[in-house]
Amino acid sequence: MFLGLDLGTSGLRALLVDETGTTIGAAEAHYSVSHPHPGWSEQDPQHWLDALAATLAALRADHAGAVSKLRGIGISGHMHGATLIDEKGAVLRPCILWNDTRSHAEAAHLDATPQVRALSGNIVFPGFTAPKCMWVATHEPQVFASIAKVLLPKDYLSFWLTGRAVSEMSDAAGTSWLDVGARAWSDVLLTASGMRRDQMPDLVEGSQVAGTVDDSRAAQLGLPKGVLVVGGGGDNAAAACGVGALHEGQGFVSLGTSGVLLAARESFSPMPASAVHTFCHAIPGTWYQMGVILAATDSLNWLSGILETPAGDLAGTLDDHIGEPQQVRFLPYLSGERTPHNDSSIRGAFLGLDIGTDRAALVRSVMEGVSFALRDSLEALKSTGARLDRVLAIGGGARSAYWVELLATILDLPVDLPAQGEFGAALGAARLAICGVTGADPKKIMTPPLVQKTIQPRQDVSAQYEAAYQRFHASYPVLRQLQ
Image (cartoon, rainbow, N blue to C red; front, side, top):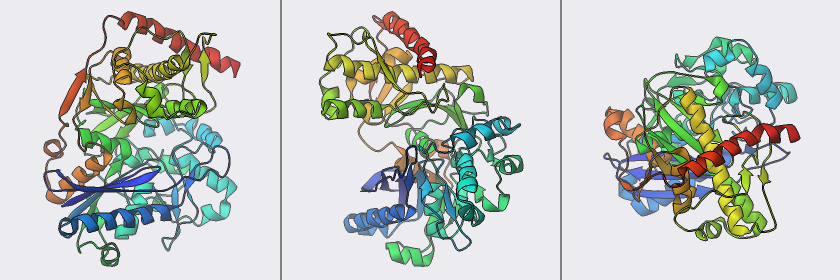
């Protein structure tokens, strides 16, 4: 048996599978995020440990025999978080999360430093790990002076389980400390942000063994002795393993809280100026690129709060099929934007409101705006040489037939909807464990899910949506001037 753990921003999902990847059982536990100041986003790592204990207790209660046969654990997690520990392994302060923007000045300074973009393959975003540590150095010098290791969130779980400080390539690529092409820590990048190599965890590939669960931890969690822990993967890399996106032309679109358009790459082909993320994949010799928008279903959730109607109910009022584009235009920059603008201070807008604008028009315009923003990401990906032949739609927004058809039409790509079952980051983490423990070829284990339905672009309205996209694309610089 193998266990995939997906450490999310709001909760931990544990997935128990057999050696074929078939699901045996699953459990979830949830926790909160702290926002002590505007732009801050933090989490107490103890919450992750409590969630780990709770999910494993639930799995033992329902599948005691299967848990007793556990051989390996893979861990996926939200990227970029700075978990700082001292020489004794104690956490020095709450983890600074991926969506924390306090280090925007440090990020801009580091991004302008010679060789940083060339080696890291990316713009230095405020959410990345290196500028967070630079902020700590300035504002919490006593904490900074005590840092023995900097661990990414999922790697803290691995450290707690095994006693070894280990990371892997896909997550490390989002720190601004990794030479992403060489798949190794860069002394140039570390020095540029005031860090040392001894403060970095050891590096493995995501499908390689990182350590063995400590006997005392195994007894505490009710696990058998000798369970191996593999490197695992950052959340999007693990999700790509879960949906079998390993080769050129393969990828997915995620309509979650944020929006992601990901393309697998078989070579390192960065173009930082595009604001496309270029990261190592969780399997050896492979990379991926992705465009990220910060508010996808979060935009609909925001509107649901304003209208005091659940987001699912708003989406449910729409037909399954799209008509022509809305007159109302929504710019989904509620929390700033990453791809392609790299603008943490831009904010959203509705344009074209009139006396006849109703609730349905607002809902449609929000879905259109998010889809147009993902089209911006597609264009940025194309500029790097990335290719997408079709995409698999995942995330909560993919439950809306209207939104999926809209997305297929705006991206001008077939969008596959997976059949019911597990296919996300937790499955990807479990697959990495299978490969690491058994030596299986990732390309044989990480196969795409069964497709329930393929949504084709609507050619009868594609010209109208292309014109609407061009108007959307032209709106950002104007909005930027007004703010």
